[in-house]
Length: 252
Image 1 (cartoon, rainbow, N blue to C red):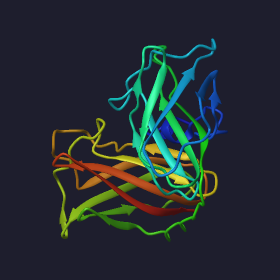
Image 2: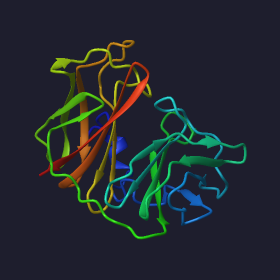
Image 3: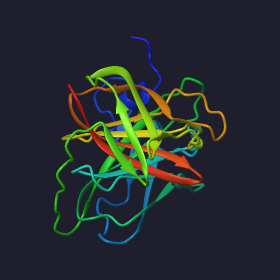
Image 4: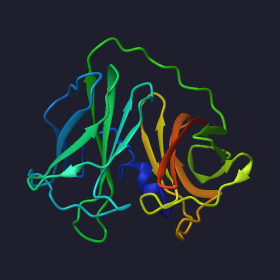
């Protein structure tokens, strides 16, 4: 099957086994000094990516304007963070996490080793425990529309497991929004997490970027490989401000 835009982001593995749920793939491994993060205060989370030779990787390709994208989500799919850590000369990454609530969290690293034009995009992850009494938040019911910062985001799709087209529209006070600004070389950034196993789908719209003139329609080629509920976080930027819309999408 030909690879579609966004498919590599969603699959997370050439073998279809992990989708971001393993710490090691193709000889690359996500290593961290700790498996516990304190509750209630910002934390500098340090980690390395070791390569097939067992040493920390220091050379990464730039994709979507960054060398590594880092995500955090709690097991109930709350507390979403999308960060861009700093890389030290010795291969140590530092992700500045905002305060985490008690519970179990999965932390993902999305990167491309700079080994040539056909280097794979990899998504590795580990879990950390945040001590304290965890109070799970029920996943919101599936819906096709949500509002954030005065903007209404509506998804138009017939969601089914596998590859399909997903379209989002952005409006404000009933009027189409046409001044979306590029964010990470695209007019939007969509992260979706599967309820139950926290599989990650990471997508960008196919729309051509032309200055601060994005919207109102954003078209994605989506690969949501499992049926069930996916909690979707759609990030977009206007007037220098980043907005994060979230909603639950049910996939048959």
